[in-house]
Image (tube, rainbow, N blue to C red; front, side, top):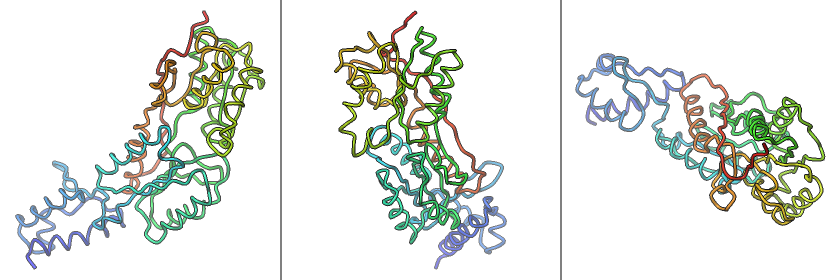
Length: 358
């Protein structure tokens, strides 16, 4: 075996040992020359190869540092668990995750569990035989998740685990990347009030962390501006009706809400863009126009805003920013950096779905 090949083999063995010990500063050229009895030219050639492969990163004046990648390709796998990766804003989030993680040398495996905890459990158990370096999992509801034991097993075994959009109430403090849903909903009320709206209805999902926080933010906004918060003007729907087995009922439920409960309202705040456009269709079905008769706002600044004559006023955090922040948080954890949750602020994207009442 050539000296170059032997040194490469030895350093590829050293990298996992250092990562397990959370030692990130790689030995200097002089230290490697002394330790392995080779020339500086050979050391530099091997370090060049390791850097091209993504295992180390040189910093001028500081030396070489490990990136967190392991020589075994399978050990650089990140498993992503999403309820419906092919729907709504998730293709864009997933594209960002693949791009950011791939640039760091990680491979991505995506698993869809369709809001089914039993299916999620089967997926997690299948990963135990060959645990990934990291797991990014979507929190899909505000109910207890029975799979805490498996997530703990992964974490205890050294797999870094983070969640998107919230934490289940029975889970400990796993790091999370989430929207500032409370403040976002508050800001939508603020925007509508600034345009003269006083009687504002709301339509939120009842069984998600996002829905809970957006409802609380809406309530707080109404109270802060001295406006009435009315249960008669509030519609809370579960995931079964919005996207699940009972979704065929959604148009009828929304039409009934439009006919019977928003007569004196001038605006409606919706859980997300998908719900907002379903509501706009229901409003049209009962003879009301947007924004002529009533204004509608939503969340997520999704692709749906480009699909109809009504361009929704919506809050945006940029789906790609979710992927970028989740990737940054997870890879930092893999490298031994302290982990903290990330809260993404929203910005208002104006469309033509809101009419001034001043």
